[in-house]
Image: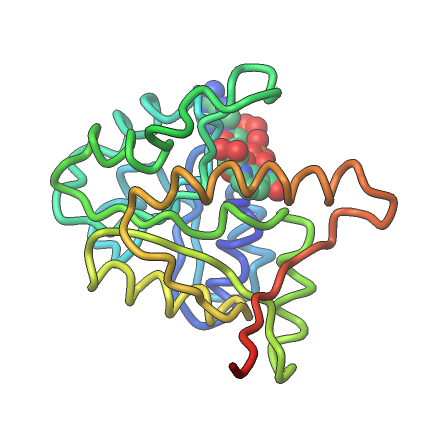
Length: 204
Ligand SMILES: NC(=O)c1ccc[n+]([C@@H]2O[C@H](COP(=O)([O-])OP(=O)(O)OC[C@H]3O[C@@H](n4cnc5c(N)ncnc54)[C@H](OP(=O)(O)O)[C@@H]3O)[C@@H](O)[C@H]2O)c1
């Protein structure tokens, strides 16, 4: 998710720092191949002076990457990280809370937005390529800070989706299980994981 979204953010004209992998070569390759303004750095480099951070690590790695990122007070953090157990078979937080809300508790001074986690990574380049289409796929997001949500909506549009504001951060407790439905359709269906969704409204 981080590699693909970072690449698309860079192609959309943003300055990107790729961070957090066991191989620095991979981060450098991502920066080089993004064909935009991008570089490899540490989580601390990525956090410094950033307008937005994307948290895209396995739930078991969240504390480690946050420790490496340092002080995140006042930062906008978009999270697509689902609170999955070690073998990715189920959510460890659900129903009465969510990964996004748990993250907000860990970082009370940061502005958390749940975004991008409801689609499979395999669809992202296709959505970006189809940006000129009239009917873009939807992407739901939620959060408690209006400015952070505006930043998220801009990035969501830049990737090629139609941002759908689902309300406050606590709505992530519905959004995260919805992602498991999308994963079921993407990875257990017969038509491949290049799947996005679109909400439509009809006249009364
Ligand atoms: N994949 C999807 O379609 C999808 C969709 C929705 C939400 N999500 C959520 O998005 C998050 C990221 O998923 P992903 O599929 O993008 O995972 P991923 O491909 O495994 O990427 C995770 C990143 O964390 C790094 N990492 C892992 N262990 C590390 C360690 N010990 N030290 C330093 N870096 C480490 C990985 O680097 P290495 O190169 O070293 O492995 C990689 O850069 C997850 O929370 C997932 O639930 C994923």
